[in-house]
Length: 486
Length: 104
Image (tube, rainbow over the protein chains, first blue to last red):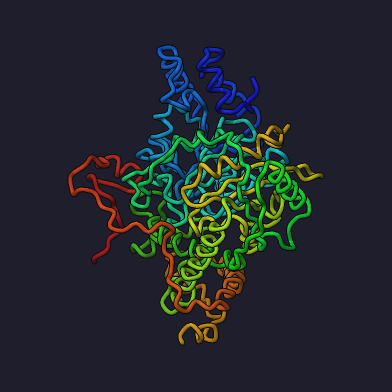
């Protein structure tokens, strides 16, 4: 059996009794065994637990082969290592949490379990989800399954690489400024950031609470919709979760997109884009018009200010959220002569460089005398960016852009220059500031080296069905999603 | 008026890494202070561009979907047990977190 099979196909074979969950899970485990030591996509594999969950799924399937209330029954799923699963390590790729064991399940994990999923292991990430390359990990860098010298993107680099390498049928990541979509683009899979408030953040280690959102990474769009069906919904354990009805996101897949209004933000199509990315995205635009969509140019005038706004807001929120790591209640501790010295030594030893930089930048922009000039001003610019999107969505149904201006870069290429690293987020961060939904799906390859290129679609908040339908129409009319790394 | 004056009052030289690290309770080595100071200085230069925008009369956005007064009934519910709450503690004793002496 190949481990590049869609969730829907695996599900069908399981329900028809053609295979068992134990067979499926064993095949994925073998694949992990064969190459994960090189790729380092998963930093913890729960072999025994996964096989036990598989056996339980087989039992349930034997009793009732059409267990449709369990859409992921028996299928191996990986979760980003900043999402809590009770009794399992939750390191967030940080020395600070090297020995931390989660005391409870995140809401998304409870939902995965209720859906019958087999949680096969934890995926690598940039420490506390801060980064765009998965190089800032206490567990070492993850390699791109398409080229071992290249990064997989980040911060959900392990989740994306695990899907592309065939270590799981789907995975969960978290997206604060593009951390699901950018690695999906670099690894050639589908990655979706749902609208803010669509998926509960309970049990997700907080980085920037007004921006973070959990979402699925999968081989195809239908699988993303299936996983979103499982994890979406209001949760009273997350006060920012939105009490909004959840539709069946697979329902609209396959619908005609004739007359769909696709907007091209002109500020996203400027100099500096890799020519191969540009031509792949141009071809995608042509494809949408062939499918009957109406292409229209729109303007998001404050695009140039999005990165500055984002790095003020996300670091401010991070500096507050990470104050909890003080060496008292959990995590690492380095003793000091008094509590303040204990805090400083613990945090100095426990956090990696990028986390320290962001905590300091965030502390600075919130500090007395600078708050109005940086933080409050960034919140105001956030309003202007939100208004840009509101206006654009009055004219069009979805926005189409590249996910990232370039294909994956090389390991080490940007790690010494944080600002260059931040600039790679230019096309993805706005939807976090605005709270709308976005998806990245494969739309081509670069040559020499052959690396995937991603197409980003953005939709209005809580219009995931329209977004997924639009993505699915493109995917099904092209064959980019069928390629898998050797 | 304040918004107009701000850019003139600031430059990246205001960024005192030693002071900020102290506020953030982060012990840094001398080498880290040097490297991070340069790197953060570059980022601050970059974010300065927000000063070019006129934000007069623009309301700040703290949150993409503002929900207010999200509460639940005030009733006792199941939560972590004492053991669970302490399971990751770096130092514990008698069912409590152990900390260095605070009061002499």
